[in-house]
Amino acid sequence: MKSERTQESVCADFGSEFLPPDSELKVGIAISSLVKDPLNALRHPPEGNTCGWYIWGGEELSEEEDFFQPLHVRHLVQYCPAIIPFLALAPGWRVLIAPGQEAVWYEEALLNL
Image 1 (cartoon, rainbow, N blue to C red):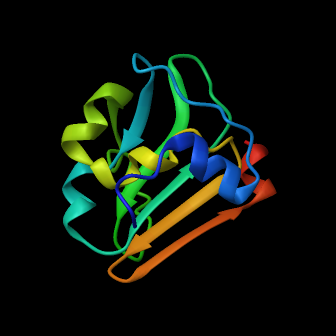
Image 2 (image 1 turned 135 degrees about the vertical axis):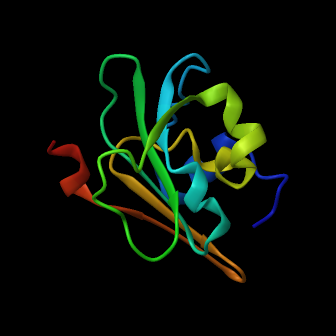
């Protein structure tokens, strides 16, 4: 992944509407899992004080009730900088980042909560 990529260019590359989240909104993030590859992220429609993004590391998404913790978007620079270029992708988009691999795709089912 090229760190100089901007959120606007990522959206343009994949044909997504440009919808950057407000820095005061929250993501759901599994901080303790971020040491595992791959890095996964998906965006549901925003609701309440959340922007819709869920971020975790590893092959499997845990079903534990406390797997995700709320974190303000502005803190992602510290906890998960690799996801920053992708944050403006619209709801319905998914991201997978692993060493030597980057995949971004649209999954309409994410829009149906």
